[in-house]
Image 1: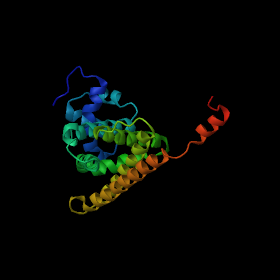
Image 2 (image 1 turned 135 degrees about the horizontal axis):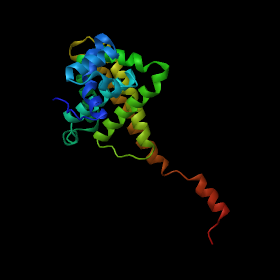
Image 3 (image 1 turned 90 degrees about the vertical axis):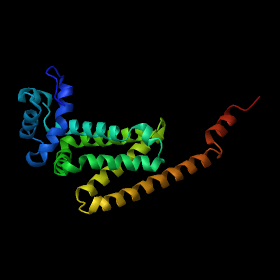
Length: 219
């Protein structure tokens, strides 16, 4: 779909992100890849440069934005709702791998860029954002500490799975899928243990309530 002549810079970034990724495998996340994508989309090169003034990190962010959108389109909430929770997480990660597969060289280069000292924080934010989106799509509504532990665990698992994926030459990424299944099993066991601990701790005597009663005995 062609980009409107009066498109905003946000719309330009969204449109060019996947096209830059298609060129970044050969040209890196560079001005050359950006300009080639602009030519393919019929976007003025100066406009494209203005949309990505922050260079490679901005281009990579735009691509990851498009991966988020494509994952949601492939697995809408009503479809995920028919699955068990482990399947919801697994299928979303697998969908992301499917989307990135044609551009694995671009993904390798993106990881190299995000591993640079000045970009580490951005890489962490992008990983957290992906985990947050997957949990929200899976129906998670936790607002307490569970919100953070779930996302931290999933962000770590997703990052590790992508690392395996980048070196996986097995048919249909069998090694990656097996690795992912083992890690999701670990999440499920952790959540079960955590739930049991919380339930048991609710029945334990509260030290603060005991001290409060010493200070303020009942009349």
